[in-house]
Image (cartoon, rainbow, N blue to C red):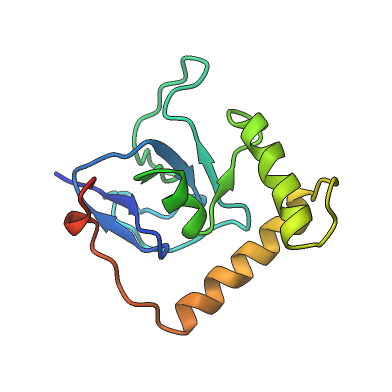
Length: 143
């Protein structure tokens, strides 16, 4: 059975068999039958490596966070997810520096995730409220 755990660039969670190159997390979004019942359960939306420190997880384990998958980093960023501070710390630092320069206008500084996460969540909610056009992953050449 194909689970609904693949994220489009528009932040939609869809069911397609391909896994992608990054895993993400928005908190626990599924019920006991592994059906998506929420779009978000936390402010920080992160992307993680598929493999890190030998950690193995049961996908959509009851009461645990919902493992989401992204085609690539561009898709994850477009969907409103930033790099994880644990498994992608170096990439997160690059992201924080780029945010400080591009969004905050503070070149050479680092923006903190406590500042970034609420803004990203707000922007994602605004985009959804304005009715983005759906993007079909199964039609993507790399999907």
